[in-house]
Amino acid sequence: MNIDRNDSWSDDNDFLSGALRDAADKIPGGEVDDLHISFGVVRDRVRRRRAAKIGSLAGVSLVLVGGIAFGATQTPLLRSDDQVLPGQSQNAFVGPDPSGPTAATQMPDPIPSGPTASGVIRDGYQPPWIRDLGAGLECGMPVADLETTAAGWSVASAGDIYGLTSDLGGTPSTAWGMPATVSEGDGSLDVAPILVWSQDGVVVDFGTNVFGAQGQIEPLLGSAEGVVEAQGAAFTTCAPTETEANDIFETRLPEGSYEVRVVALPEVAAGQWAMAVSQPVAVRLDADGAHTATGTRGGSATIEPPEPAEGELSRFVLDRSTDWVTAELTRRGYVTTGTPTVTAQCESTDPTDTVTYELYTPSSGVFGTGKVPCDGSTFESEPVVGGAEESVDVRLTDVPDGVARLWAVLAPGDGGDSAAGCSADGLTMAYDPSRSPSAGASATAQAIVEAALACDSGRMVELATQYPTELMVTGEPAEQVFALPEGDLQHYRTLVALLAGTGGAFVGGDAGNQNVVWPRVVAEEFRDSDDAWQEVVDAGLATQEQADAQRADELMGYTGMRIAIDESGAWRYYSATP
Image (tube, rainbow, N blue to C red):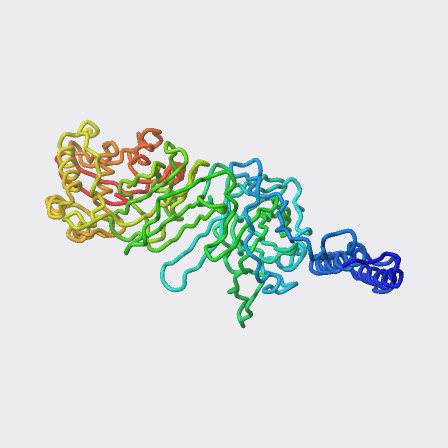
């Protein structure tokens, strides 16, 4: 198409000039000087929001009209003889804090375009807990307005986004988490940071309601000192379904490319909250979950996670073999009987790498830990002892950059023999007679350990009924306490831990026939002994946090399980309290 600039150009130019002026007048920020006379006072926020939503459309119209007017003879845009070349993105990837270990410099291929998030959210809606903050935050607001307002506070992403799916019966539910660091300023932060999602310059999700929740917790991936979990949910809180009682959220964000920011909400004065906002992190959302960019980490992988087996409790899968990281913990059951084990495989570009994991429940804290070699071999842990009936989190605390793929499954150990459902099965602890101050008590202690390690229910009942032994506070019958398979309290393993894992000490009893009690930290002379408390932790009778709290309690002290045998060898009691 050829245009003679001297032939009929003036008429076309007049028309296009008018079109350009009209389009310019419609673009927010490009108004004529008397805009305030024509439209009255318009708030800056409304103007910016309109700019975020229609600016791109008006801009495209302006460019197209301008291209017709000026570029017909200067640009290949309308030349039918030129090949249209595929575009190449020049956008830099903004990943987790560039100073952190997961920084990347190249944006992977974007997800194919589809419906946008602005089409599913309610513009101007405020989730109740966001409205209560009084910070002027609302769905559809320009993300540029999301700025730090808390003096002295800062927050940053510290790792990859991950999913947490609870599949414990009924409809599975998924939440998002991301490691984050928070630098404190004025005021206090008693709740977890939230994950705020945006797309095309507007906010489309304010994460989950963290007020009234359990507070700050460590992340499932990449936990370290000072790192906390920023929290979100799979259903956007900008698309409410109204009910008579309250709004509920059951709409997912469409698949696509997003920016996610960590936002901390400190209380800077009584009843007054402010914000600390991180730099954006590029996140891809698809049918497999939410992903951050792999960058230079990971590599090719050949190992594959096994299909879920009956009785599986929890599994964590980390995949960094593609451009986008997949990380997800799935909870499928509760620790109720027996002693589960962790089975895992890891593959890394450096086969000498190892990944450290922790087993965690809210009531027990960290109750198991181990290191998985990343040479592709199958790892299986020693049996672990859970706490109350609750789901268990498998947390990956230290993941080297070379790790390409890892899976870890917590499940009941193999059964099929007389030791099935016995918590002492597989234990290698041995009783040391020198750790008892009485030979008579020591002989009975050794017999108990041997019977427990052998998972010999009959022998355990015999030992417990040979003398007037008080079992548990409620005085339960020995046949019930030592029945197999075991219940939650796992008496077989606990007795071995007490007698083979800690030392005994004299506490009370008759003159000339005192009681020897394990663990010795129960005795007044060892009440503040570092070594005695460390024995309790090493034996698995308490976590470090629990031991520290009990030691600080001057009234109660150690409140865990204990056993007493008198000097004559009579088993007196086995209970949490004497």
